[in-house]
Each structure stands twice: as structure tokens, then as C-alpha cells.
Image (cartoon, rainbow, N blue to C red; front, side, top):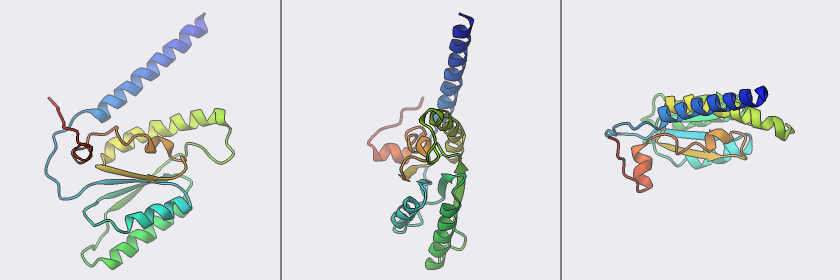
Length: 175
């Protein structure tokens, strides 16, 4: 009986902490005029990073800063992103210093990881994704990958954005 009560208390505490984090992230902000849109790019690994960078080649500099999120063990994607941004800066004479950031979070699931332990690692990755998303406050998100960064891919609606709300036809009502 005591273990059931302890488990229920731990679950309630976890739910309360998650609700508090969601409230902080979803809290309304007053929209202001912008010259650029902050872009959050969740890159997969290997070929998925190449695919997403091909799509980003066509974007103008109005999508700045660009925040790339990669797995903490993915050095190849970090190298590809750095090369892409330097080549992009070389092609555009107006870009002296490209404004991009690479953020790392733990993978939700490693290759051949058991499904039972995946629950724990996904929750851990999601827990670290909330403060990152809150700090970056992107206007738009673009993802490509098989789910190795699942928490970040599933959170695009968890931040207020006037640009995203307008794109979806929603009006903000923050009183």
C-alpha cells in the first residue's frame, strides 16, 4: 500500500513539474514587428541532415538566426552544418558573419536500444528540450529524421509565435 502511495505521489509531482514547464513555455507574449524569423531546424543523422540542408539552401537570410538541434553524439551532422553555413556565407556577400547556432540534446533512442529503456531516455531528452525551446523561442520549425530527436519534433506547438499563429490562421488573445 505504501509503495502505491509513493508511486502516486511521484507521478503527481512529475505531472505538476511538467505542467509548470508547459505554462512557462506557453505563456503569451506580445507580438512585435520583426525583420527576420527565427528558424529551428531539427536535424536527423547522416542522410537526413543532408536532406534538410538541401531544403535550407533555398531560404533567404530573412530566416535568421538558424538554430540547429542535433544529437549529442552526432559529430558528422555538426560538421555538415558548419560547412553548409560557411559555404552559404561565401555565396552571399551581404553575410559577413552567419548567424546560426548548433544545440545538442541527448538522443531519444540509440540504435539497438531496448524499447523499455527508450521510454526513460525519451523522457530525459524531452525534459532537456523544454528549456532549450523556451530559450530559443523559434518562429518556425523544420524537421527531418526518423525520430532520433523525437521530443523536439513533437513540440513545435509549444511556443507562442505570431508568425506561426498567422500562418495557421489563428489569432492571439493574450489578456
